[in-house]
Length: 110
Image (cartoon, rainbow, N blue to C red; front, side, top):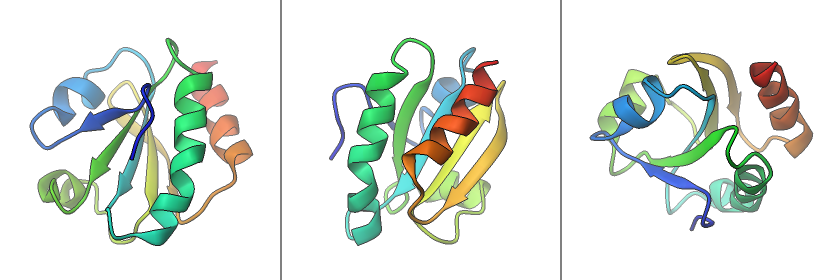
């Protein structure tokens, strides 16, 4: 359920892929059974393609990676978090327009 440019983040690789990344990272916390998560997937794919090489974009399946979901207090999905220098700088809960993600990403890149 992810495009070619969307990475899969797990409990095992989250530290390396997200928290120690030198580029901003957009993380989509989702689950297979979540309808709104599936509705948001094309937007996440678009962002991954649009920002390829400048921003890392990936997904965390909250059912399979409960430790990471609990660490970041994910209580509703979809939740999308933007990380910069290993710190969360923006959090979106629920369906969010693409332009809102782009505004946050562009700010993180500047």
